[in-house]
Image (cartoon, rainbow, N blue to C red; front, top):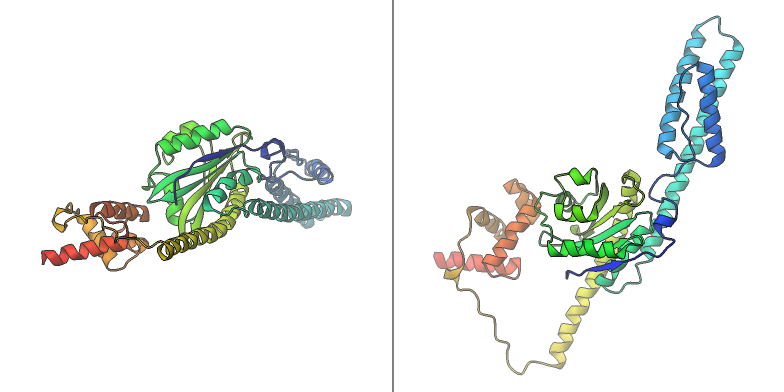
Length: 383
């Protein structure tokens, strides 16, 4: 795929003006009041210091954690009182009632999380639907960042991977298109190499999403880009076609001044998975269209004279290969994949890809098959 760049601005009413969709919301007002009253009653009944956070703004998972601590404290007191003959029935009834209230609020919280999950799935489905009208890979990728920002991210970047090079394609920064321009320009000026040094190389090798925190001080980031983006944390999800990582999807919550979390990464990963299916279909359609155009041109306008073949590099002039390159070339000639070669040589798959790139250049070959042919011819000539 070609390296292209484009930026998109999100109109007002986008992620920054709406709810924080990538973050679990607090409880409903009625449930929050019930939670607050429960904390007060447990504190009074057990005479212990219990913090009373605002459940309307506290993430649901944090509320669940507080409820779990309340349950342990009340249950422990209930069991203790059951062993004491002097405990009054009223006291036992009070503790049992508190346990029942805790379980009731826990059920409300669990139901809220299920509803939230369904809402997130609908949001991802709507975001994917907004890019399905694209008819080319370029147009498709150009629409992706804006759709991603509508999930609650402030900035979304989509990029391609070609010959172990991370190539920025399109970025959306909510209401700041110029900043998106600067970031894409910085990435194009110095395209990062996915040689294992940065976290994006791990995502490309393992085809698994990840979160990165304290990015400004991390040694696993591209320093050129991190200075321009000023990111503190971000999520990365791979775009795959036929099992191969062909691109990356980045998202962060810069304007919200918060770190991305597992919920954000789940949304980003769901979107990347859906995008990958559409990207695979578009890539295949583009390839078939290109093949059909070539066939049509040959059928309707045959060349007057045979095309002169480009002169091949004489076998004796092929630059010498290193010992490691010879090992890689022999395994390539034996029909092994990059992943299998990486396992055989105990190196990363990105390192193998880098060796293959160097081999293609040295052998003046445009494909692996041509490189293998030249290698085998050189071996036969040597014999």
